[in-house]
Structures are given as C-alpha cells and as structure tokens.
Image (cartoon, rainbow, N blue to C red; front, side):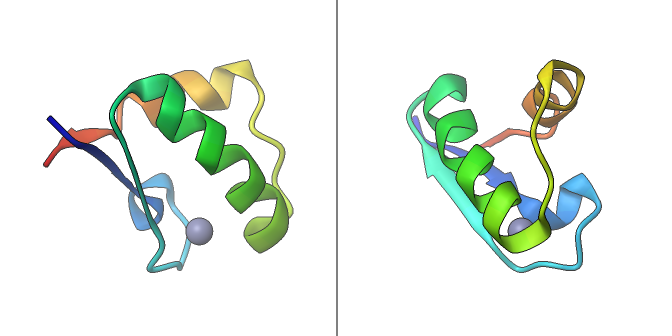
Length: 57
Ligand SMILES: [Zn+2]
C-alpha cells in the first residue's frame, strides 16, 4: 500500500506530492521539501498535522 501526501493539502500553493510506504518514509521526504521549497521547518506539531493528511493510494 502506497501512502501519499499532497503538499497542497498542507496549505501550500504547491503541486508536489510525496509518496512512501510508511508515514515515516513520507515525513523523511517532506522535511527537505518543506525546507527547500517553502522555507518551513517541520517540527513535531506540524509532523503530527501532516500525518493526518496522508492518504492511501
Ligand atoms: Zn510543497
């Protein structure tokens, strides 16, 4: 089962999607994307919020 996080769902005007086999795998990719593309550091509260936005593919 693939999990997907749509960056747009996190409130950014961004068409990036992050795919992974697990929540952790997705968060590991989201951190550098958020830092580079949005200059946002994913702290623990934000990570929890993002977890809730992950959907099954
Ligand atoms: Zn983005």
